[in-house]
Image (cartoon, rainbow, N blue to C red; front, top):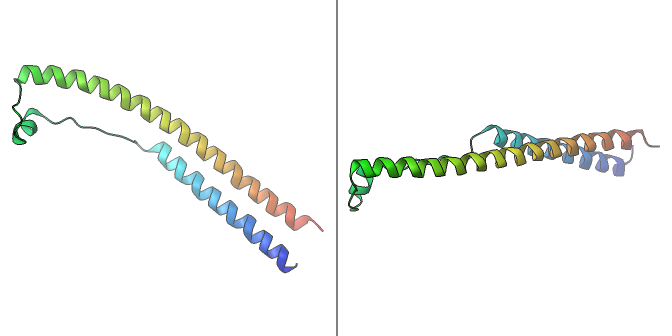
Length: 109
């Protein structure tokens, strides 16, 4: 086995490891929650010098804002999860292709 063959084998093996690491990273990101938002209560507003509205108004505002924000967060998380799943699959295929090329390179005369 020549020095060139060892170098090419090293490159294919390094690419395979890199692709498998990236695949694992995308799989991890697909499995974790991306974004969480907590709305401040009226006491947080008052402590910052902002006049807090009445409790009934705050309750209605918090429910409406929470509904809109949670809808956005759910859609964003689904989109991010889907793109991370596709990314993980793509890098997994690239890693397997690198292993395949490594094996082919070793079998070539």
